[in-house]
Length: 238
Ligand SMILES: NC(=O)c1ccc[n+]([C@@H]2O[C@H](COP(=O)([O-])OP(=O)(O)OC[C@H]3O[C@@H](n4cnc5c(N)ncnc54)[C@H](OP(=O)(O)O)[C@@H]3O)[C@@H](O)[C@H]2O)c1
Image (tube, rainbow, N blue to C red; front, side, top):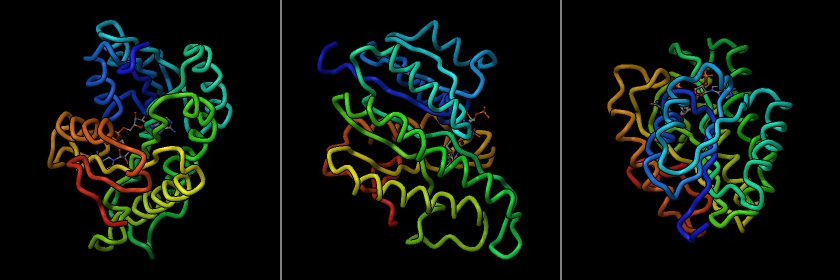
């Protein structure tokens, strides 16, 4: 492995932002990509990228809501990588329960579901993959968050349960950074992108937002740990 070769692991790579991250990374022979998703047999788009990637790509089953799946995937990835670690762990899997939910009327079951995936799942993936991140060169964890989780932005009353989950994910970033000052851990807002999650009225094409996300990630230094960035590279207020 040369100095420029990097290992990337992406959760939720079956579609949307995760799939586009894999697509863009697959253009470089320097990238080994671990593309994880809930159901590898049904991800034709990922499989197609696997045949055209310039570097190496492995598709691994990982449902972030399922503790056994997270643990089993970490064992499988360790076997695939041998003596290499995971340079960039991208906690991308997540969802917005949708609807214009508000604090006093939101469905509490939705709140539990969104918290489980967006917060608990991300925390568990980071715990399970910590030994592989420690073994790497870049030692970087990216929690894909949203400006909707920023208390310092003026966001109004809608999307309550999703916003609360992303605010909690941001605190996870902060706690991970404080717990392990030797790692680079950030929150990243990809922008409002045209995906199933972002909806067709989103402002940006997914390719544009993801290009920005990858540019920011590749330029990170340890001094950036504990920060919250937009895809444009600006910092988002917590
Ligand atoms: N698009 C935006 O405008 C926007 C803005 C800010 C932040 N984000 C964040 O960006 C991330 C990706 O969003 P997106 O727009 O790409 O959404 P999307 O198009 O709905 O795709 C969501 C992805 O997450 C996966 N996923 C959901 N729950 C999972 C679980 N338990 N285990 C493994 N994978 C799971 C889905 O897998 P399946 O195919 O199996 O369902 C899918 O691959 C999310 O964290 C979202 O909150 C998006």
